[in-house]
Image 1 (cartoon, rainbow, N blue to C red):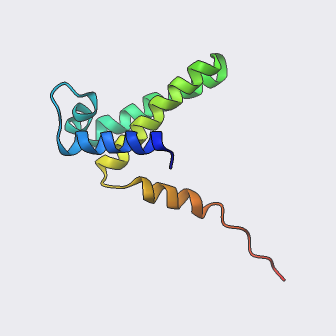
Image 2: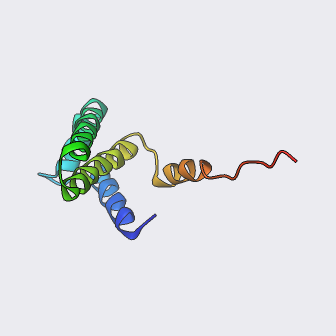
Image 3: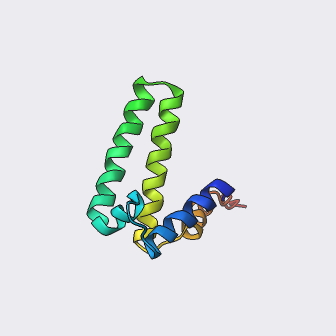
Length: 99
């Protein structure tokens, strides 16, 4: 993954393990999976709306919010970026030649 994604991931995991006062990420973990899932839904809708009617900058901003919340969900479920990356990589396996 990219250095930025790695840094974001490490920050999210750190907030989960050692929640600092006033941290939005820590508050999401405290609120639990229902709140995190709801945020993903909200951000997904906002991303779709931006894609249809707003600027490229707005699309990128909303997509960043969506990805952040997806990372939080992975961490909340004790899943990893490595698992996500492996799943995505498995979708790029070349088709077997029928010969």
